Length: 200
Length: 200
Image 1: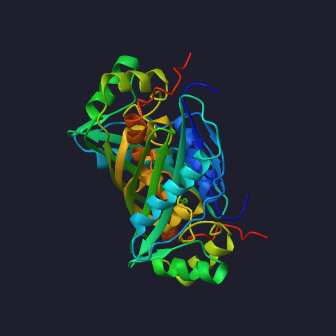
Image 2: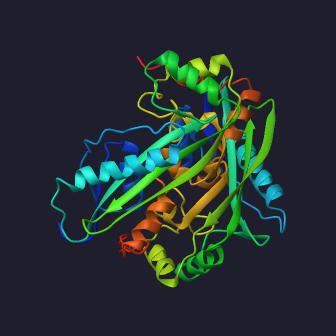
Image 3: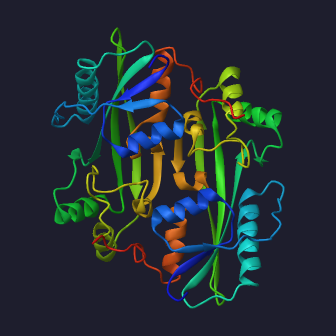
């Protein structure tokens, strides 16, 4: 390719959508890295998973100058417990009952590598849910959006109606901490909006 | 039409996108109401403008049972000053310089009317910008997104890279306070997710 571009080591459509929204040029190379969970340590978990994803792609892709591999991992934490993706509707309802009417934390790890250097960091965002009765929980789960989502909800979808407020980087909850990405890109010499073409 | 639907008294594509994301059925009837500004009182300003927009549409549309008119108005406030839409690139750059590296508030008023009752309320969200140098300001403005946006930025666009964190309802900053909408709909008897069809 040549020139600045991000190689996104993730299949997440939400992460693709955020890079598109930013106007950052990117390609997707899905990582084969197996996500691990370090019990009781969500920050170490997401940082190691982000780095593992980025390194796995870096090891098998020939980067052009200006290309950077981006690895991201996101988890939902409540009561010190890390919630993963629900295995079925019953588990999705249980996850939503646990989150209803209170605050939980979303952590993402973010890693960037260019073959010579790597950087890794994390972002945490608080999310407060509205109180939910059983009818609301049942209806939200029936709408099907819980699938493939940590914590069984999508803040950028119908699930926005579950949420009362956020504290921190909203895009971290969607799946890609934008402020951390912008800072980390700057550390690699990619200045904010240098990727955004002027309108004619 | 018959059945639940919202009549959105706004031409804003961002507000339409949020109703679509929620799965709420809606039609657009752009209000002819002139937005006013009450000096020094952003909450009264956005509530009166929201109500004025909704009432103006209500007065000339024949509502079917289950239909509700929705009026919304959003402003950006910094140092007690209400920022409107910038008139040109110079004003857009000045607005971004004012917001850089600090927190401002976004207020939206939201009004719902069904012809028998009306309800009005507001939501406030804090937004903290990253520090911005002159090059970043110039590049963001050159990308053209400042147009038609209070405060000269779009948090749901390339402008997400301007923002460090939010505190409150993120969607309020986009232009429609979702948590307040869900609560106000419930007060009109429309329960959360009653509009979301189950996936087959």
